Length: 212
Image 1 (cartoon, helix red, strand yellow):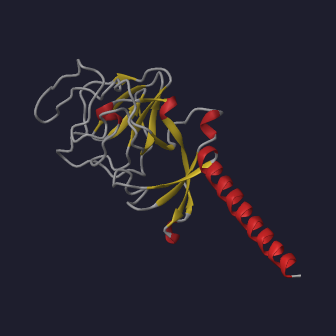
Image 2 (cartoon, rainbow, N blue to C red; image 1 turned 180 degrees about the horizontal axis):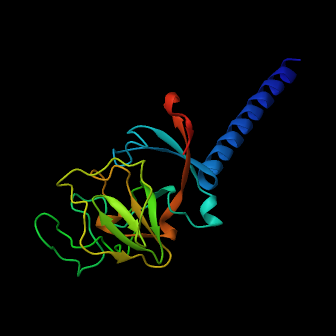
Image 3 (cartoon, rainbow, N blue to C red; image 1 turned 90 degrees about the horizontal axis):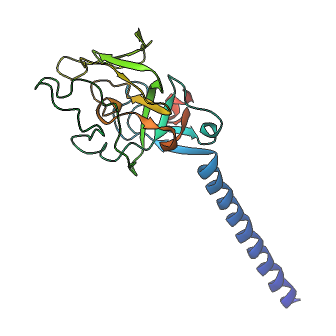
C-alpha cells in the first residue's frame, strides 16, 4: 500500500510538472508569435501613452499586411537612433543652421537595426511625400488629423525646410509628443522587417484599460 501511495504521489508531481511546463511553453509561444506585452519607457507618446503604461502588441498581424497610417507600432529603430545625437543614414544630410541642424527630415536609416525597441505612430508609408511644419506631418500635401498629439513649442526643432519621399517598403514614425520624441525625423523611416507589431490595447494601469 505504501509503495502504491508513493507511486501515486510521484505521478501527481510529474503531472503537475508537465502541466506547468506546458503552460509556460504556451505562454512563451503566445508572446513569441501572437501577442506580446510592452511597457512604455519614455514620454515620446504622451498624451496617448504615459510612461509606465502597458500595451498589448499584435505580432501576427504584420505577417498578413502592412501597418497603416495612424497605427501605433512597436519596432526596432536603425542603429544609432538611441544615441544622444541620433544618426541619420544619409551622409549628405548636413547641418543647415544652429536653430535647425537639418534642412529636411532624415530620408534614409542606417543599414543595420538596433536591438532597442521603440513605440511610435505611423505618419507615412512608402511612396508618400512627407513634410514637417511646427511638428505637424503633412502627407502628400495634406496635414494629418492630429488632435491626439502634444504640440511642439518654440525652439523644439519641429519645422524642416524641405520635404522627403518615403522609400517603398518603409514607414515614417513619429511620437505623439512632438517636441520630445526622437523619431524618423532624425534617424529615418524603417523597413517592414524591423516592425515587431501593432499596439492594439492598453491593460495597465486599470484606469487606462481600453483599445488604441
